Length: 357
Ligand code: PMP
Image (cartoon, rainbow, N blue to C red; front, side, top):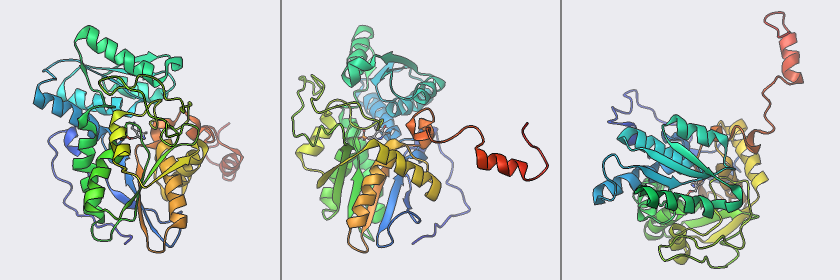
């Protein structure tokens, strides 16, 4: 199937921006996938905050509203590599909660500006103290001020929303033609754990392929994470190194991911190098018109390896967690010029009108 059926009736009237979260499309790859497979990407940049983390953001806030741990007007705080902060900023702007984000200084400048644009305060933490430093700062500020800490790395609301939305969408979209492979990376592990719960139950033949950065194989190392009593990390994992795949693999194995590991919600673990992710993100943009970030490109790099080796007629789904526009100031765009190149200058000069001096 290559066509998309569009109705002329619109999508209906939405009650708020939050009602547009989820139900993201699975889109066929037509130009760069091998001919013998059906390769699809789940395009999470269709969410209003342009990433998969909008799902978790709305669920953390609404679960806390329901159980009373978040009071009207109370400040929300979270440690995040960016997308969760942007998602929380969307949700908090709509619902009227003040929001404070702690974030390691190395994540892209776009992320900081987007969160501030959406009304959040962003407190940067030093890169030497890594992800554990940004998490500890959020805990400290929450305790000092009586704020609601979102705890994306430990909260049940994370994998639960992927179980009840992302996974349901996948089962509905692929129940007829079947799904041979589901390919994803992990940040908190919410996606793989939540989707894994459902696929193992309802589509047990689907192979789940998990990926992590080649130079930070904290799951692949087999070394257990040391934790505090509340499940948060006690120390940086010894196999971790700084890597270029923003949003993936913090410097510890999150408790949310641990459930997926303990239950073997993956059949194979494949490392991927950051530059490969950048290469495939650029190919997706230039040859498919699909603009995704480095983690999407990295997941796609692995999906392409799987595709090459898969039996004819196999169907593969690859997660694309966010948009490429979030990476204008990063290596993803290093090879993309802002000024005209030779070829463009020659085109300009080839007809008389409107030439730059
Ligand atoms: N890619 C990006 C860009 C992300 O921000 C995240 C979430 N941190 C992920 C992938 C991984 O998603 P999850 O937290 O559900 O494992």
